[in-house]
Length: 454
Image (cartoon, rainbow, N blue to C red):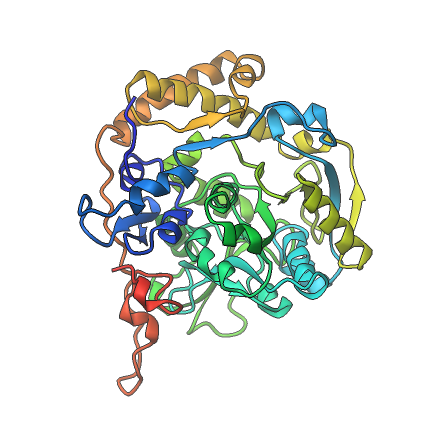
């Protein structure tokens, strides 16, 4: 099986998750850019092989090539029946943010936003590192550090588009106090590995929150969704929301020319089911952790409930003692309204994820047999799930489908990683060029021009 020597090999081999931890660890060698049909990807600042070792050293914290627990056995205090397929879980709740505005804006019950806000106001933490829409290109994401609940509310809701929240972990180190990190499961896994090699980062992380994830669509997916919403010129886009304003909420977009009464909406089934999921990056098909097993707290949708008229519910997992303590503190403070639930609510809420995890074993095994690069997953049980929970058809599909994708996705060839350069917004002739126009491909250009992304 082929093995990567640098994070650039990981990206070329289509195993990159786009988390951005390599850009944080090696800022002089690696820059994150958006690649339209692949996602956020690391590109070299200096020629590969010019003497720098950062891109190679960053492999030690790359969730694209390795992921694992120290043990597959439940630790004291963990729910033993959930450990094999769902990772460490110490407590489960279902509920929502007490603030109706947060609950309404959130993708399910607003728990991640409310809990992060409580850490700021009730626990004395200095900031929350998360993602939000780029002001100049609303269909792309950028990493930001919020210091107030109002800033968090302004960025509430899922962003089904590429994001690299780990690229600005330096903001956590410099924040002056403990911080919350919010990201996808792979992002949180990268943070867990990075804090083991960066003592200052470890000291500054007060809580990690993972959002359940079924895969990251590329920016091509968002552009297709916008076309379905009638946005033919993305330079006129004022805002785009993927969910929220109800549960599960609808995809919504507005242009700068839209009158107040104009509504552009797609149902969740139309946006995610018909469009976005078809554009998920290849590495997501090899993911065994969709529920944030390496986080302190993980939050997702309780899909066993009927949606529509429900204002929003969140399923909340505390995976560490720190997670239990802070969730309970937020409930005691009246920030969260939660009810403990039985362990079987988790598999009932995410019925597809167990079979998805089993299918990953078939895909990875097939890739290795074909001599291709595949992630190394340790103490993340998959083979037993493949044998016991997948039908014969599903087993065949995991193998034959992978063989077909090797051909259709050209997995034997290095990925072509051309930075996406979004069309420039039209502006009046007398206006001053926005700061972000210094580098239109960089989500970090405004915050840190010296980390320009080309």
